[in-house]
Amino acid sequence: QDQLRDGERFVTGTRNVLAMEWNPWANKLYFVMHGRDSLGMLWKDFYSREDNAELPAEEFHVAAAGDNFGWPYTYYDHLRGERMQAPEYGGDGKMEAEGNYKEPLIGFPGHWAPMDLIFHSGKNLPEKYAQGAFIIFHGSWNRMPLEQKGYKVVFVPMRDGEVTGDWEVFADGFKGVEKLMNPGNTAYRPVGLAEGPNGEIYIGEDKHGRIWRVTWSGNP
Image 1 (spheres, rainbow, N blue to C red):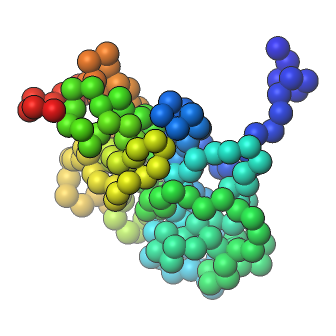
Image 2: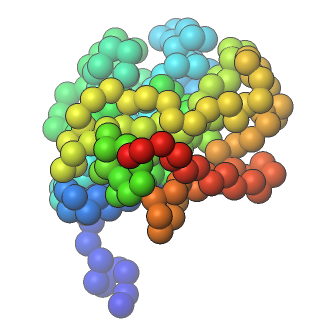
């Protein structure tokens, strides 16, 4: 097989996709996209320090052939719930993007850094977790001088590929402190997820190379 001769473009407009997984219940490809950096650093006339820290969203998407996810011409503002025109292409922080761009299923807070995604079978877990998405976030590094955030695993309830409710935090505390200002001082950096043969969830981090095994001790 030759990539150039045999491959074809499936979608376009993605940026730094690391968290990507096939959903067997929907028979579709899903991913979480890293949003851009430095809106406030490069475009101080349009964006505040708070905007720089909070924007843009990390986008959770389902992909279909021909989809355009907007990069580099747009970004998704989860606070407004709108896709915005990038300042490099005429945007000013208030201008909504025009064009046929895909909207995310969920816009997570900016700079959380999505690293992995799994869809759980629901085996040996409460019913609500069946077919749902677990997403792991490495945590931010570029929200300074504001507090660094992310560093957690979240759960998105789903059925047959459709989001059925609000996302929630599944595992937290990886920072090791209540308020983290310097990303180098975090205790752990969550990075990988896997489901074991009995439904257990493995959580990996890459600062110390630690792996946690998470099981359910109640009655599913």
